[in-house]
Image (cartoon, rainbow, N blue to C red; front, side):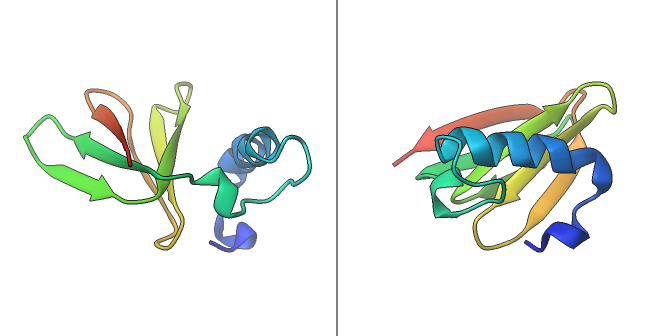
Length: 89
């Protein structure tokens, strides 16, 4: 994921996550930010999507759920009525 491709409204959340997962060392995402966790989203119509090596961040004000993946970039989904499950290896 290239930082310049990330919508401005998500940048501060990503920096905060990067700092948190790197013990304050890095402001951009590295391999440690993703861990060995996987995310499954289930939408109101029953559709599902599964991401390996990913994490989520929420923006309740915008009604958005961001999914950030190690290899497949980022994706933004509606937060309302989206079920999120987190799985760990």
